[in-house]
Length: 190
Image (tube, rainbow, N blue to C red; front, side, top):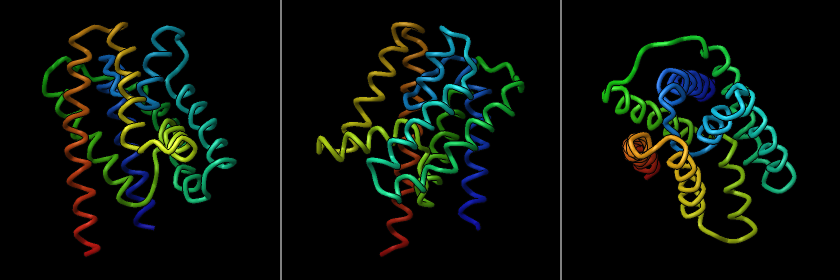
C-alpha cells in the first residue's frame, strides 16, 4: 500500500510541476509530456488529453507485445497522471525565475526516481522504448536518449535556444537525482 501512496504523491507532484513550470514555460524535456507540450502548442488540445491518448496507445501496445509486468507497472500512471494534470491545470504561479528551472529538475528527478524505485513505470513513451528494445535489441538507454533528443530538437525549432538550454538543465538535474535514488535502491539490496 505504501508503494501506491508514493506513486500517487509522485504523480500529483509531477502534474503540478508540469502545469506550474514545464508547460507554461514551454520546457520540453522529452517523453510523453514533451510531446504533449508540442502538440498542445499548435493544436490547442489540452495536454491532459494528449497524455491520456499516448498513454492508452502505449498501454495497449504493452499488453499485446510486452510482458504483463510492463503493462501492470504502467497501468495506474496511464490514467492518474493525465487526471492530475487536468485537475491542477488551472493553478498558476508566475515563474520566469531561474530558480523554477532548478525546482523543475529536482521535482522531475525525485518523482521519476521514486516511481522507478517502487517498481512502477510512467508509461507513455517508455513503453514504446521498451518495444523497440525488445524487437530491435537496442539498449534502452540509447533508445531513451534518441527519442528524447528528437523531442528536444523539435522543441528547439519551435521554442528556441533558451528554452532548449533550460530543458537540458532540467534533464541533467533530474537524471542526476534519479541516478542517486536508484543507486540507493541497489545498495539496499546488497
